[in-house]
Image (cartoon, rainbow over all chains, first blue to last red; front, side, top):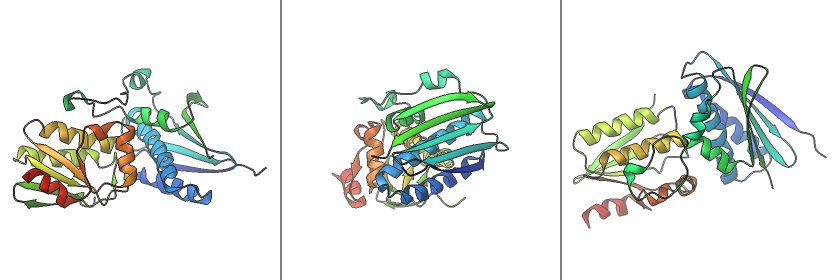
Length: 143
Length: 114
């Protein structure tokens, strides 16, 4: 059985730097020959998770760090996003919007889709506190 | 920051062509404010050409939803030339029922004159 390979990337908590995360993930997905459509969804989840750290955990303060650990296993991809900011309150998750048809544009929320997208796309999602860090851990099966 | 979009006029239709390849949280607010300014200055028919976009996150999606909410009910914004993955993102979030999407910019402009 092939071993797991992990890559860790640390960025400043600046929304302008988040593109670096999906550049890394795109490269890693190409290593396992993941089709572009699947790598798009994985990049999107990583970006949404990092955005949440910067916006909610760090309140857009740019002098903190966000860690992303990307692990390639033979059968799955695992992404762990860590921050040392505020733990994201449950109400952020509770206020997330469901993906439902809307008849009236005024009923459509502008925000709150990031966490829902992560849950829709990934196979497992866990938000835990360990080593004094908030950790969002997501996995997606490769096959 | 690089220019987010270029704009031209086709009659009374404002054609906004995205220049960037990403509409994400880093630029979503700036994009939203610029588009709201256009609407406040009188734009009532907007075609948003998204051909350049390779990536959009939920903040980018929220920004175009905000523009649509701002322009309706007195006006309309339609999308055109969106990539496969952006289309799939609209479908996953059910926003394909909210936005009118055209394959080409010409079709989108013609929609306003029909």
